[in-house]
Figure 1 (spheres, rainbow over the protein chains, first blue to last red):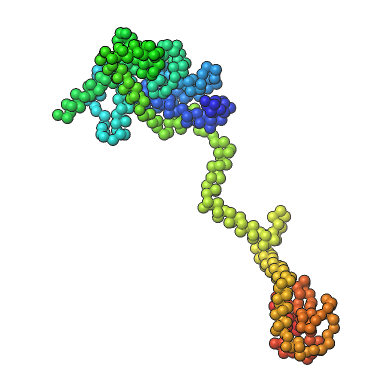
Figure 2: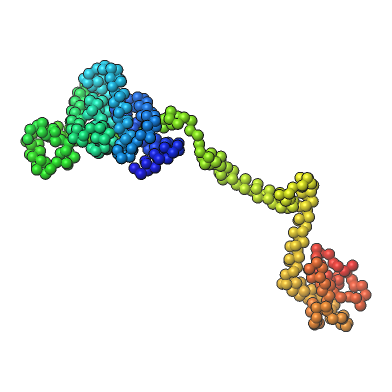
Length: 197
Length: 231
């Protein structure tokens, strides 16, 4: 954290290399946050860039008393993602969960095989598809807690809601995620069995 | 405890955040409820999937893209510019020739007797350099030679050697000799001969003033640069 503050101070002093240092530390995290929300690499890339432009423009508004720089960064990113979600809501109103699941079953993961790398990629894609099925509130809570390892206090600061609400959303999000994953597995099983016949 | 209560406590139970009494109650319900046990198993699997899920890799140029969008074309600092300029020069294959060139140049400048602080027009003439280098070389040679002959051990060895070679003739020529300028003398010693100094180097010359001109082979002389002072 101290390192973040030092980089931030140097950055505010106009040192470009400090800004580059901050980018090197946080780009991957913010990109992953965006990717988990959108499920699309190109879109996540654009969103990451937009988030950092916003961060760069509002860097002076960061108040260390309000929480860590990482938490502030996540909050800005999350707000931007929510805005983006609202903006693009109409575009995503194209089908139901069942449609998506059918697509998933019809289009098995390419290159499925015994190697660990392929399995890991399959798991990642499966998780991403399941996360896409969650409502934004539940999705963001689960992502921040289980994929970004933020604690309840940090998540409540990022989301701007009480810790009790955070806990409730995380719990509901996990239950929903488990159900979606199970349904996906249930639909994949018969499909794979059918393809083998 | 109901199914709904179990659902509400699922996360706390899996994270070990429940009070012991509540935990016992949940476990008691799970022991008799297959559906809830299955549900918690599914949640546990989902959490495990999150834990092992690999991070998505951003494109390598994403940071450069953001930098370009935020601070534009980044201006390197002076330190970075100097480091970038020196970096190729500090490579061994470049640094070594440069060092050797500087070293050689300094030797040439020294040998040519050039004073870089007050250069004159004639200093730029290669002929001047050559003359000065030539003179410098001779001077160095002369200094080295003088130093060599000034060494007492060299003098002693040469004197002994001379003494051994010249002893038969010296014994034959037992004629009275004037006292050596340096003081005491003894027969057969180097002081039987005249010791002259020429430019600081001792020259041992056999005293043959009373003798007829000897044969060339009996002339003994140690002079500088191999030339005898005896005509």
